[in-house]
Image (cartoon, rainbow, N blue to C red):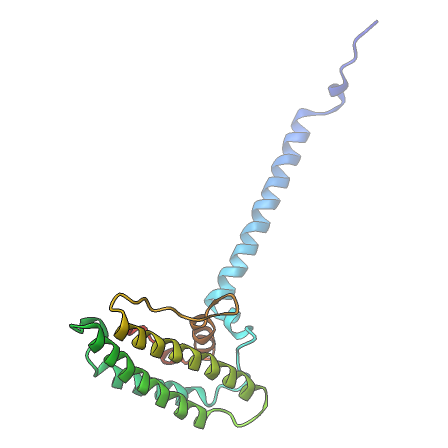
Length: 182
């Protein structure tokens, strides 16, 4: 009886070459995939494709200017964190929140009057109002408890500031992102 070598029919050079070709193809495919993602993000195409993106951005420069003016007024206030007491800090937070309330009234006045853009803007303004209510609740709590923590309402699986900021960013209104002055 003779022993037969089952592997004798396979050329070791041929299987190694096929493996190298398959690996090179895999590396090339991964490079193309990640290159596409990189270019997609660099060109901000991802933001243009987001559901929050408005078709017509003609009003957003005006909205951004409203937010910039509000930020300037808030910046003129003493920084809340430098207050000597919790009650003073609460007063500064309330004064700043008053400015943001006025900002929302102004934004509402310049927003698109109708259509899907109005629906999106109304949703954004509603989220912003929730955030401002959180600021007011924090200021009230600070007056009762100097060690109070600022808690932000969760919505859509994250803090309500996430959709506020995403809407502002994708619609080119960076000055309208949620304030960080608390």
